[in-house]
Image (cartoon, rainbow, N blue to C red; front, side, top):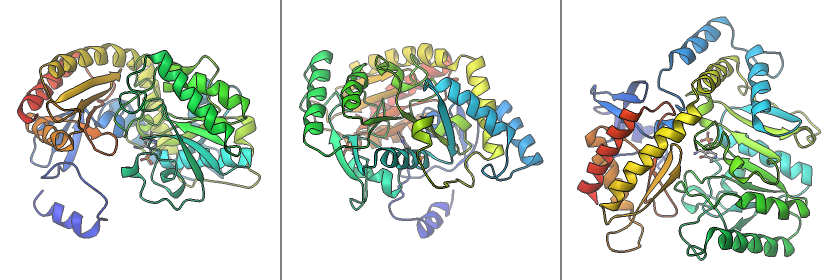
Length: 427
Ligand code: PMP
């Protein structure tokens, strides 16, 4: 590591923050573990949502990537490529969207940017509804639908965005309400908004807010929204960049917890599907996907190498029922973290579903967010050999736990014990 951090600082933008007082250089990984440059091994409870959905260095994916890289990497927009067509067919069938068309990009940002391009064009409106505390990417259009102010560095986008209540359940004006009353209040807020605006193109929403601290509305909220949106002709874009592919355990997609009134019009995905290779994508019903009247390509979207990775990864996760694993092992992990949380005055709530678990910290004895506490727990967990993430609203006070979906019961127990020690030491 010596000198690497200084060299990083010399060439990187100031707004690119690294985790840890002494930043970590990761050199390799296997399964649910990664190693640093000093040869120290860590249990990785965050990489699952960043990149490595299934497992580090999964042999099936490595083989598919190396074989394809040795064969051909070429444009997937001008010529046919078999892995892309095969992955698109499988994603279309899994999406739940009827008459689905798929377009591959290289990131979640580019996927959401494409979704916004489609929705605004289809509806001939540059007005968008987004959720408070949301995160949708780092491009000019996606920062402007990102309600989490700490991730939205400009307000100059030409999109006009209106923010809707509902993404954050545990704080804010409706925090004390029952599920049904919360849903009613948010629907009334949406009705009110739509009664007083021009006609928005779409609502974009994460079924479980990721960067915002793993917060979710009651099941069915987006179905109730859908009924209102339909009346106004507004499309529903479900950003599944963190919630897709079984992470929440109960469902393959996050929108399926809100399915009563049908699937979203547009679904976006990214992050883990390539198990580390950069794949993003958009699924939409054909009528919406085909609304553009000029060409639009992504040079590296759908590259044969990333598509081969996606196919191998998807096959593995379906064959090994990793969604079921997320439900079972995630259930155990939540239980253990709740036990640890109950012993700590600094833990306000342990929430989540499957392998997407948030631990919200407060200054002990208060209801105030505790970003220093979160940073201290991250350091202590690292000391104990565990990597976790953090997130939340304007103050980063939520520990984010999202291991690869192949996490074993023994690893869940081990990670929970390390985190319990870290909470004891740091809060
Ligand atoms: N949407 C959501 C919900 C995300 O969590 C992220 C990444 N954190 C993105 C979009 C943007 O994805 P990417 O970083 O691949 O551009």
